[in-house]
Length: 316
Ligand SMILES: NC(=O)c1ccc[n+]([C@@H]2O[C@H](COP(=O)([O-])OP(=O)(O)OC[C@H]3O[C@@H](n4cnc5c(N)ncnc54)[C@H](O)[C@@H]3O)[C@@H](O)[C@H]2O)c1
Ligand SMILES: O=P(O)(O)OC[C@H](O)CO
Image 1: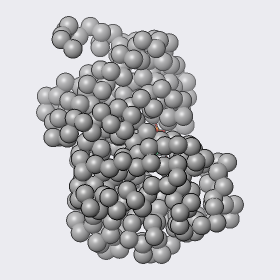
Image 2 (image 1 turned 135 degrees about the vertical axis):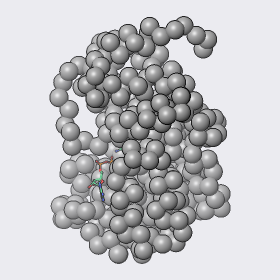
Image 3 (image 1 turned 135 degrees about the horizontal axis):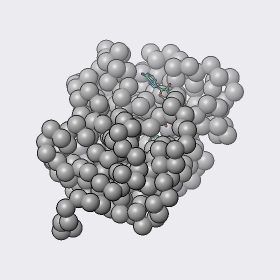
Image 4 (image 1 turned 30 degrees about the vertical axis):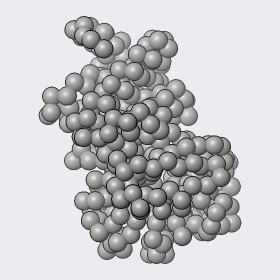
């Protein structure tokens, strides 16, 4: 059996998807409302929880299963795993989060390997909105696991009628694609929010993709992974849809409107983390630098765009 740890939008959607095949335990920090109303009103309203889902706040019960999908935000992943390290020993842990740690520059597969070395670690990533998965709309994701046999087992276990899963052993590429596309989505939202137009967005997506490839090469990821669902696929979705929280944060920054600070926006911390790694390693990441400036208030969108346009001309 599979357990899902994390009762936010994505954890709930994955549990709903898996419940088509078998019973699922969904662990949440505050399970009461979901358990009582059979709906995650706070994060995924309008999606009924099937009977096959047991909602619990008892982590020991959830961790009994062998396959554990962990859907907490990336910046919380290390603390969450380390806080229950004994219980996670020897398990198969699939990180369902996207980002790079601010304190270390590590992605989710590395965080699992460092905190629970005895675990088999994997990542589930790619273009998908929780609401689409929960509604049973067709979706394709990437499962990355360095051990191919374990990856194949997970691929089988997590595939459902509407959720098609591809697999790779390139965990570095999969974790970077999912993390970095969020930063580009903030940039695209900001450009659209400031009224700079769709041509500007296309330029940011393309040059943002070049930054993703550069960063991934620095981490020895396979360039082909970046061209797949977890990279190009998720970049396309996130930079073009108002369902994306990263894109919506960008829209708010660009248009000067308010944004609910309690929203999970992985790209904000990831932009800062990437920028630090880029500066330290002399990687050219001007869009990431511009997003970092927008987030800390040192740049506005028009001057950020001007700084990108005024860079020395170069070959593509
Ligand atoms: N929502 C989507 O459409 C979607 C799709 C694909 C991937 N993701 C990824 O899933 C991850 C989670 O996002 P989400 O959409 O579920 O966010 P969310 O804000 O809806 O939920 C986050 C959940 O994590 C819990 N949480 C936070 N810190 C915790 C901790 N220390 N211990 C235990 N629980 C903790 C919160 O209580 C909350 O229930 C992110 O990395 C996101 O990029 C989300
Ligand atoms: O709402 P976002 O911006 O976190 O995007 C959700 C998923 O990552 C899209 O694949």
